[in-house]
Image 1 (cartoon, rainbow, N blue to C red):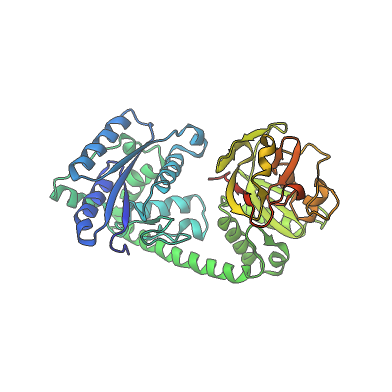
Image 2 (tube, rainbow, N blue to C red; image 1 turned 60 degrees about the vertical axis):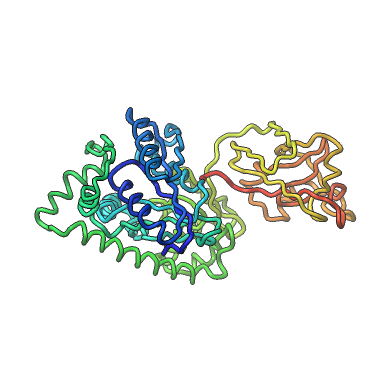
Length: 436
């Protein structure tokens, strides 16, 4: 699965599983000309966190493997639970590294435990599907690609086999004291529930992992069906509600789940999904449909469903200066603006030097001439004509040069500031960052 000369980043906690994985990859790397590195995420949860980082540093120094140690703050995500927050921060840290593959040390016991946890949470088919050996990613995964794939080469191997290997090769590792705390759901299953099941069903961990793979196949078929139903009904950020109405309820819910997943949104609970589908399909045509679940919102506008992160309050009068940065974050809006250099399309770069450039929000009464031969138009009309949904209009950044409204990002550039043919220009684009 991993081509020669690939760059592989091993997730290294310092525990037995990840030490075995690193040892195996280190042995195989010369044979396939792999470029091996490791990453340790320092959560700071345990009083032993510094010692674990030191252990990983010593191990990688001994094996001559480059190591990245990243400190993360778990506090902002504690409401999701310590385990979930730590997992989210780890994956985000790994994704920031430059590599072709991120190798993780999940094994067959992890697969069985995950299935049990998801079943006890009442998860659907996607939730109980197996962790894949090789993840599917958007974009290339071969050397030189821009999106690292996640690979779990130990996924079919029981933990007992890994422990035997570690002892045979006299490997050393650290023990996370929290692994013995059965107040955590996973530890409760690992230390109390699954051993009890093994007394009656000795192969239960293997058979549970096999069931997870069956669920994964079923999930893939449901995605295939959703892709068929989505054809012609789903554009980049919206789903046609008429298509949902035309499908049977199970297929409509499957398509809606698929749409939410493609947008990176959290999966709603079963009752929330039922209510969401009912409101989207049955509410009056002129009704304002806005459904909140967790940190997400689903809206209906002009016959289409949209999903976006639920954003908090923001300061309407705030003005952000732009001083030539390639990117500028506006955290309270959950957006990032990119400023790309181009020719003949966008805002004339020389024209922007007339006065300080700032980013602002609507205050009412703004006007803009979208074409040289057009009359000035109210911003309200421009937004309506361009199909900008109502909930996005108040949060749409406006580019000003001095007191002149230059650009409504993603909608129009004022005629007097448009770049001419062959003229150096700035193209401003909006990138959502909420939910990253």
